[in-house]
Amino acid sequence: MSGKASKRHGFLKLLGLLLFAFLFWFGWTCLWVVRESWQQEIHPADAIVVFGAAEYAGRPSPVLRARLDHAFYLFQRGVSPVVITTGGAGDDPKYSEGGVGRGDGEVAALDEPRDDDGGPGPRDLLSSQKQLENSHV
Image (tube, rainbow, N blue to C red; front, side):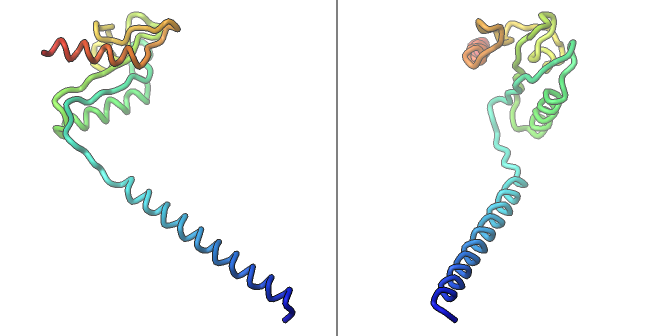
């Protein structure tokens, strides 16, 4: 075997070894992620907050329904004694996402106020939660 062919053969072996190492690492990482995703780490909390997703004339959207169902599951397991639903009224002033989550549909005093662009913002949510904390003191 000539020197050039020997170098090429050594390079291909090294390349194959690196490819094998990468695939092994990638497979191990994928298995680890799947294993960790199966674990349910549920810890007690002061409150379960359900963020609004959408409501259609007083009925929750599929995403909001899934969030509410999960919150109800956690509530039943005793994770928290309180469930807080949040969400603004959007285009329909009669119903709000938070109200639909509570089951009454009506806009309540703690529903998210609107920003300048018409939608609720993170500061509004914190403000609503502070109002809730102050009302329970």
